[in-house]
Length: 350
Image 1 (cartoon, helix red, strand yellow):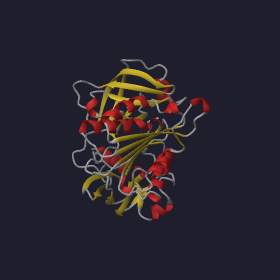
Image 2 (cartoon, one colour):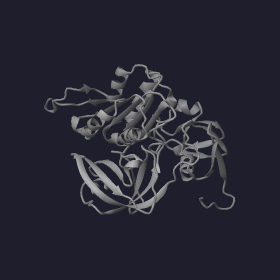
Image 3 (cartoon, helix red, strand yellow):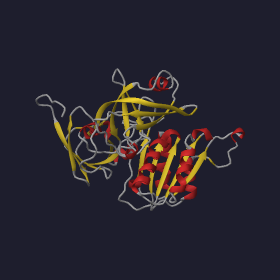
Image 4 (cartoon, helix red, strand yellow):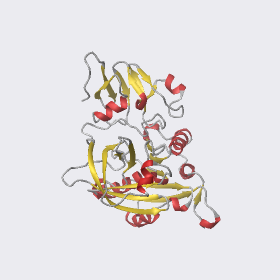
């Protein structure tokens, strides 16, 4: 628990319909307080950019910090919606968040990890393997992410690309962002056996297993990492709900693990795979689907009313998918689950 000076306000937050409660200090965001106490409010970028943490304020008062209008519009704000990642409490609060995880969610831990493998799977994507301490359990859900803690405390976040049963290590897909402090190191000086420090797991991007609805998985670029973890988990848990995977990239080379997908298909008869390329050149010899990946979904599934959708990629992909799927595809908003990343300085699966 954070130490609080005498007289410093501490408010109580209740999340409905789960009934989970937690305390929030006057100077921390609602989301930070929830994460600190193991209450799984949904979130993505944690920077007011993606809208993943949007929920309804049923009672109480908050102050909203800086955020992008695409994440929360003035009309939504007037309608009682808030972003928990930039909201600070001014009173006790009651929120409506149907995605809150159950009591007993996996704990968040800090620990050292050793680089056990580095392999380029494309010109700008590195598959990084981390070995975790043998005497320290690290539990997580397929689809969640970890944060690297750099020497000065700066953090970089990456989704785990493997399901827990493929441990005890973790796999990460890291796209090179030229000039990026962390990715320049990964693609330059990082060597096997290097020790890094991580914290996690974070995130509310995981499979909702109580449903029997057909599943749409949509990834753009290295947003495929947590989608891969979901597929591995479905294999392990024997989940056979009809599932269609759409993976989009600008060029065919952006679909850097197609061979992995093709190797899984014979053992997963319920899984269909649709690769989509937006900017293929004649030299690519691409004969598959073209255009924006989320539009390919709507071409195949004009009515998503009875589906669950899981999307991971850049904010523009997540935002476009959510808007079009709910407005045109009749997808219930509560059946849309997303992991959004922005830049190397924010939530970054790229």
